[in-house]
Amino acid sequence: MSEKNKRLDLSYSQMKWETVFRRILIVMSSIMVLLVIGTLITLIVKSWPTIKSLGIGYLWGKVWDPVSDVYGARPFLMGTLLTSFTALIISIPFSYSVAIYLGEYNTKGWLSNLLKNTVELIAAVPSIIYGFWALFVLVPQVRKLETLLHMPAVGVGAFAASLVLAVMIIPYAASLGTSLIRMVPSPLKEGAYALGATRFEVIRSVILPFTRSGLFAGILLSLGRALGETMAVTILIGNTSAIGNTFKDVFFGPGNTMASVIANEFSEADHDLYYSALIELGLVLFFVTVIINLIGKRIITKYTNK
Amino acid sequence: MDARIKIRNTKSILFKSLIIFLAFIITLPLIIVLLYIIKMGVVQVNWGFLVHAPTPEGVAGGGIANALIGSLIMVGMSAIVAIPVGLSAGIYLSENPGTRLAYYSGLCVDILQGVPSIVVGIVIYFWIVKPFGFSAISGSIALAIMMLPIVVRSTEQTLLLLPASLKEAALSLGVPYHRVMLKVIVPCGFAGILSGIILSIARIIGETAPLLFTALGNVYISTKVTGPMDSLPHLIYIDAKSSYQDQIDQAWGASFILLMFVLILNITTKLITRKWNIQL
Image (cartoon, rainbow over all chains, first blue to last red):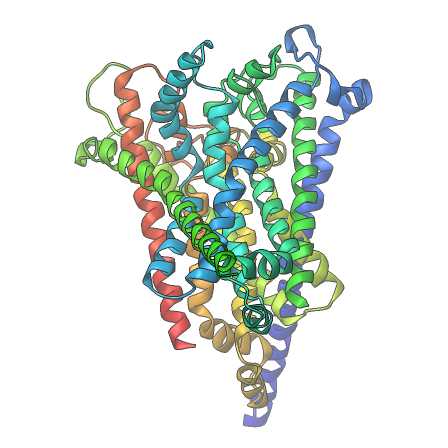
């Protein structure tokens, strides 16, 4: 073969590789789509028996008793909403403070970096470690508190779980808030200062209104985390499928969340309806977290493109 | 008039103090947890703890070798699956913005990032465990799905930061597309991609929920990837529910080891990104 032909051959093989490479890229990114569609289909198909036989009433059913084949998801929906929103309410002042401090008061320097890295580290610690620590350190303290309030000293329950959840979800809202507050255009702030506003007034009437929707998106991301959080909550929630009678009972007593009931009972499920009832919880959880996350992401993209 | 200004100034200072107080108090829980785990865990850890399988309840000695080996094998296998897939998808997303596939793929990456880990566990249970039985492979695939979104996003973001002239220069020299990507673009963004990979490993090494119904756990040291395998977080979960003091002690030791892995991986990421930022 002549020199020229050899070179032609080489470039042909390169062209072939180029096409193969492009195809690989396309296939790999299609995998993302397939994973999501596959997850959705699997969850729907496997929870179909419950959807068909119990319908929408399943979500409001009060009683969860697999032994007599009665399924109602209300205890878990309530547990999830209660723990997530309590955690969210506890966490908001802290995450806003971190965002305002890092975004406005102290944007550079070692102290700012140290705090930023520490807050990010909160998200890095595995949830099982938070749960395990809280079971042996926080729960006895909660028990003491409950004795003070003249209640049965259970310790584990929605209250303990919410406290730990609150700490775990702070970084998500805080880091997003920090970067958004840093993006507030300085002419706006300077204008307010020039009118004689104090720093507090600038923050209250310029920075916070300007970043409102972005901060809201951060809260949504935190909420998404809290709803799906499994292990720490499973360890701390106490795992009872009965609903307490008074609010005090519900708040301090043991309960269950959607994620924790799946974690606890999925491997014990022994008949089809039981299985599919648990999977429907997973389906609901999937839908709720997906919607919350997508709204949050949408707000962020809209916000940062403006 | 002066009095009003004074009030406003005081208000401003009070607000600042409050913000600083709240911002720093939140590091307290983290510090308490870290110190407590280190205090309880460090006394448990010795050579025997790392190389022995757990002993039955009440028998002295024993360690967490089964979980340690299991965690390393499963995280390694999921990295082998997730890195090529995530890297290619990330390259596609950064190279073809605006195409329909890129839009839906990006959307699905966002969705995957928010999916609760327990749901991933259920799905993998039906995809792999039902037909083939409990195995370390199924656990690894569940972890790989948790890992994918972070790898994809970090690859995409890193490559988008690179100047277009790099690619143009290489292409104008007649270098074929795949070699431009693999030999020029990816190496240039290597630090960013690597930090994304390490961060995703740090995240999945502590994941318990996807492993509950997939890798199942194993009290013996096992390297058989088609059989059940234990992992550090799973061992902590099981031991935490135990009522025997030696199992709880074992969980403190395992938490300490797990925490060290996570801390080291996170600090490595921080160092890489810092270095990378300076270079850019």
